[in-house]
Image 1 (cartoon, rainbow, N blue to C red):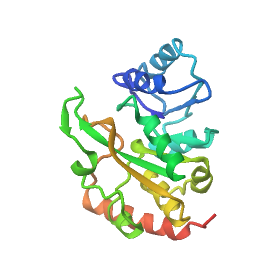
Image 2 (cartoon, rainbow, N blue to C red; image 1 turned 30 degrees about the horizontal axis):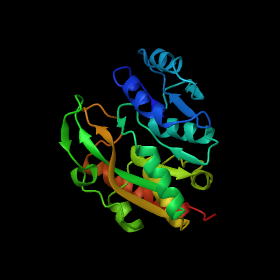
Image 3 (tube, rainbow, N blue to C red; image 1 turned 90 degrees about the vertical axis):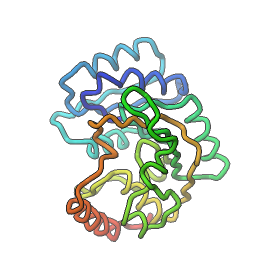
Amino acid sequence: MATYNGQATIERQLRSILPQLSNTDEVLIVDDQSSDDTIQIINDVFQESDIPHQIFINQVNQGPIASFERAITKAKGDYIYLSDQDDQWFSNKISVCQATFKLNKSDLVVHDAIVVDKNLQVIDNSWNHYNHNNVDQGVLGNLIKNGYTGAMMAFTNKVKQAILPFPRTIAMHDQWIFLVTKKNRYRIDSIKEPLMNYVRHGNNVTGQKRKKLPMILDRLTMIQCYWSIKRK
């Protein structure tokens, strides 16, 4: 998980995640120099839990891509789940994803989500519908419009080894994870079922729409990054 000034939502998110974990799991949080009570709230939540956790604080604000890269680098488990600070996982998210990993021998799993506002009022029953995502897309379709959202992704340690280190120029870490997985011909599976509330409150760092010119530049950058990928 990457955090930054998330005091309004971080407790809710952690309390939706922790009941799904065991003491063989670990929560890794990279905080990007929060100036509010985010760290204190995290510490308070974990005082009530025996789930192993580590908190890493960036020396300077680096943004979400670098923060997620640091968290992924620190992860030692067989399966890695990405989490934003302001969402709310459903109680079956991990069990459904793990069943998919084991049944299909998946390397990357992505699922749908219910889109809600800051008060958890439903905006759309499907993020894929709301954002016009194609989660069965190929490389070309993904480079035109990324249909993969990091907060809804989980992947194996094998994928972790392939995606690190992130190129400094990538526009989105979730798109990079998909492209590397696809180029290596690792197995990708999409779960149609919504497994979390995806909160859209207007101040989200991830999932924001960009202006057309920056989007075009981002696509050109990602094309260059894709061609630089060396298959494992």
